[in-house]
Length: 306
View (cartoon, rainbow, N blue to C red):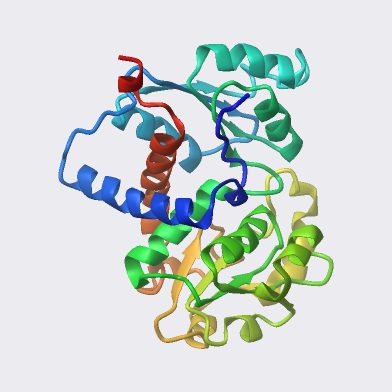
């Protein structure tokens, strides 16, 4: 199976990732100017959702339509990956009819197993381990607002979750320093930390993490599937709220990002998304443009078959 997959930021070279960011900015400009650009005419993306989504579904579906193609939405009710049929079998069948597959799932192994049997590109729309498409949008947002992120300092505040793991991979691929402020026992993936070496630093104090930071990011304290831990997490993470005072301790040029949905009054103060340093709305829109660049990169254009 020679298809090119995007399950993690490590599936691309740093040069390819920089190219995707540049291309996303170009595609955004084309859309703003109302230019029709349809390289993926007659191409079909299958979207498998085991986890609910707003931005992931909208951005992939709208993105395929804008590129001239189509997207098919498969909800958890429509597919039960690995339950009615082995994942590998599903991959063989689905990839014979589709031009790419995006999967938003729990276990990362669902993605790797599907990709191993797929004839077409498989894209990670989120797993419990990683969220690489979100990081493309985050990096695009930083580049648009502040230029290259190389050599800059990024602070992640809160849970060492899938987003945090992808920030570690981004630190390696985009060449920036990352400080993670999280409570004891909520650290990101140990193997990723080891691979990152001195690139990533774990601290306990949010103030220590944001000192001199050019980008500050956070996420909800309770991710999908952890609902029963919510009350305990609320207590534990209370000191990790990102508010205006915390941003004041960062570099004067700092921008704040949040992958959304946000729980105001929990991981962010009630007013933070209204702060001029917050670029969360731009970041959300950039999911569309970054993923269009990714789809264009991965999916064979229609004219190859002409």
